[in-house]
Image (cartoon, rainbow over all chains, first blue to last red; front, side):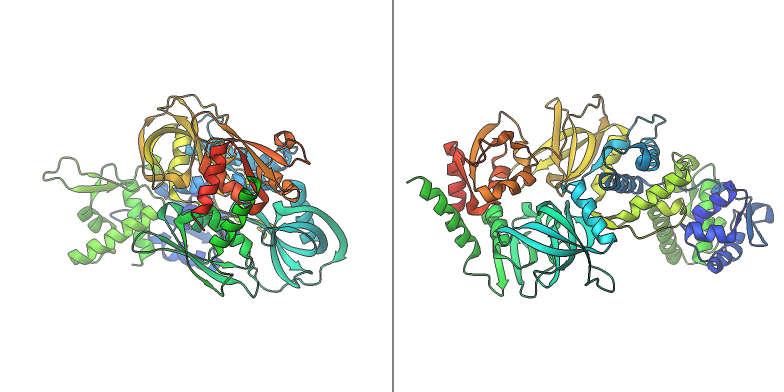
Length: 321
Length: 303
């Protein structure tokens, strides 16, 4: 019905439209469109539903004319929700695709659209009003780095990167095949085949220290749909279940958890797949006693938090001597 | 009569009328409703809910001149259309591109109401941004210059705040609200996940909008009330460039590369502690003594 509420005013504003054009614009298969226009809209109107009170639909030679549909002559508004989402989507796109040096060029149409959207949301004629009430930064990776990666992806080329691995706690050089570049949890990631791991891996772009195009063609482009996950667990990953105090509920949406739920006492139970114990150590030390380990399978060592805490404490005790 | 026809007739009736129509009048005037009272009621309630879900502003108001009072329904055309947005083809195409690029969890962006403009293609990269309905309330409040009240804080401490929202920013994976704090008479930044309870409209905003705060540049431990303390941290050499990535700073906070000592301005100890522990044993808080003691006791509690 939502689609029809878009079709009717558009056809009226165009003073008639071709079936093929309507179908394309509103993603409406032609046969369904004809059926809905002639079998439903044609019978729509108001009490007493005499011919003068019914919508007139005329289809001839593939052209549609609609008249006597005064109530639907204007399109349905965007709800505040839809408006807010569009504004957010628009600003996310601006953040990623438009560099500061380029303004009117690429960004022109989008900025104009967002200004109009802002005015509509604010019910204001003032263009200054409010399109910048939303701002989105999808990640802190440099635009240059992102553009090299996207180019490597588009041209299916390998790159050599120098990467700081949190899990391994050091810098490593790797040759990778960028196959997907995406943002999640407020950070940019590149996913693809890693020659060092001999498997698909996901890397955080802001931990790539340096990058060099190798000029070589990628060899491991996968078939089928891609799951753009911020974390590709290795085959030996452990399933970690933590029980968190209620105020840590943000953890569930800030990290790639495999499941999040609340138990009867209001504690948040989150599950992760973890390949590197260092990653878990960092998380646990930062969250403190408000996070309790429920289970780690297979185990990542005895009492992860305590071991890590002791190791860090050693440094503090060493200096005081 | 199929449901689609009935819904369209119902919408037409509600738009056409100049005064609120009761359920009985709609049952007679729209047609296609079951005769039995209970089934009519159920169907009618579902229809109203369906229309509202589409964003149709279906209003409930008493039918005038009737006693005992009876619920009436209508749609005001000005509300149905809202502020008209005329988008040129390239503007519509740009919005579609943006909507395809970003995945906001659940919910439609409503672009289908405008139709498409030209070919669509799979974008080369995808961004995911978490979105919840409170953002809609706050974005609308910022756009319409309204003041909002809410409870702010976590399990340990919570306080009522009254704020005139200026901007919603997504940075570092969190949503932030920047706006005018009506009590403190200054700009403040709030993290959305610490905003609790209901968001209440408390009137028109009166402060002029002049935001100087950029959440993406602010470091979490710099936020808060009062004077900051300067904290010195020793950081291993091979972690320095990683640290730079994290704080996005130039080296004016570094005492000297070889010395590997970094200075921070801290107002929020909890946030700072969390940051330092990211480096595990590769960083050490040197002074002031109370910050050092804070980290030590935090760690000792976990051994």
